[in-house]
Amino acid sequence: MNDGPPPPHETRHIWPAEGLKRVPDWVYTDAAVYQREVERIFHGRTWNYVALEAELPSPGDFIRSNVGPTPVVVARGPDGAIHVVENRCAHRGVEFCRELAGNTKEFVCPYHQWTYALNGTLRAVPFRRGVAGKGGMPADFDMAAHGLTRLHVTTHRGVVFASYAADMEPLADYLGPEILREFEATFDGRRLTILGHYRHTLPGNWKLYHENLKDPYHATLLHTFLVTFGLLVAGNKSLMLTDATGRHGVMASAKSDATKIAADLRGEMRAYKEGMTLAEPRFMDFIDEFDSPWSVTMATIWPNLIVQREMNTLGIRQIVPTGPHEFIMKWTMFGFEGDDDAMTRHRLRQGNLMGPAGFLGLEDNEAIKFVQDGMQRVPDSEHVVELDPQTPYGTSDTLISEAAIRGMYRHWREVMEL
Amino acid sequence: MLDAPAPQTDSRIAALLLHHEIDQFNARYAAALDAQRLTEWTEMFTEDAFYLVTSRENADRSLLIGLIYCEGRGMIRDRAFALEKTAMFAPRYLRHIIGNLIVLGEDPNGDIRAQTNYVVLQVLFDRPDATLHQVGVYHDIFHRTETGLKLRERRCVYDNLLVPNALCLPV
Image (tube, rainbow over all chains, first blue to last red; front, side, top):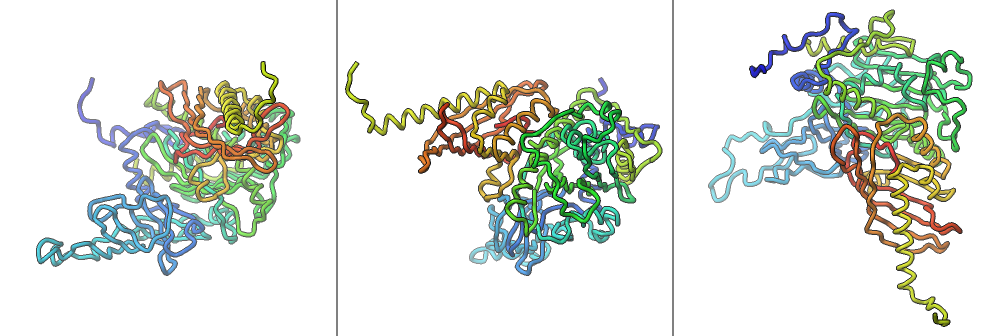
């Protein structure tokens, strides 16, 4: 046994000589790499999803949220502006906000009643001057220097993002024109209505979730529902789009008639079930409500947001990493103001596809768990991501491609300097 | 044997029998799911049944989404069919514990409203222990048919904030 200290990053974390065609396990399993991700990615130069404005319709509304693993509170101030502050009292570090959501005029830490405005400004410190001339804070205690830690905020089409970086480019530039177009196809200007939340743990590395949605190959193989009902089939009109940096992606597909799938393709797809029928097939109907050639788009917005437009079931997924081996996923499912009762119920029925009990969603969660299990129990190996060598990395118009995963790691390695 | 007519008016006995009947129903419901006999599970609902699994967070705020959302037995059958024939998930044992039944009352049409606490424990084959998968309340409407009670509505509202990875089988 070698009981010495672990070797430094530089010698422990050597990328395989094959380059982006391989991803080493330590990317997903190493605690030091995870800490570096929190610093350089979630707390670095990124826009992190924190809320939908529809969750905070009125002044004083707030929700608990996260930027990376860090708990924050998102609140709408009296003037309507949205603020994002760390959920940590400046005095003794108390995570002061305990409710998932609510409405308040100010934040009061329950321990010593330090009181903050919704924008994080420290308003009051009890017994600041002491009692009867004794005790209290020093005379030069600067209230302005002891507010809550504030993050920078931007919103677009009702979606709220926050960043620790003060010099972030505008969101439109951060997304790039191709991803912005798909973002605006889903958030098309109609006001959102919240249908509810799913929350689950996932015992896998957070990046595996991005990769799963940058991996159209799996979608044609794992998900019987997609394949058998023609939602995402090898041979469909489809696109695996990435931005110029490779960090964001959109998996897009147009629904086709599954009965017209060529026989030779069916043979490759074990998930295709000949003659499978549903008692209530209407839940798979697509009501074309978007200005888009795609019936399904799955956008992976770096580093913590997935935008699901799976026909008419729409949702946000927020990644909250809790360590290298696990993350929490918070889903916010929505519709639009103007949906009638029939449309809302259609969205709710179609919701059976996704989420931790969804026909597709449960399979993804299981598959990602299996990947982490494999790496933890047979460690120190590497992943093979070679599909579609004609596209070294980035956008590809074939589903049988891993070019978007390679693009993501090209960006990741640059930011992580690994 | 006495020939005297049964005391039909003893509401305490009627209530006891109904309580027992629903308890027995829930025990059979648990047994069907624990054995993963999903077709038998679907037959415990009426044709127009509503079946929902949702979090307390959603239910308390009257948010409509369900982890599982079935309008009608057709959708309940589709759920059972998909899980048995198509879905990919790791094999597991489940154990449903159902108790603390409260019969809330009867609707004018004879349907019975009730609620019962439930716990679902799960064993995965790569982990040694059973873990608490769900804890919650069934909010039920029972309908009396010629073949006994059936569920016209079962809303499973779970207290746990986070679902552990995936809910692969019904609750």
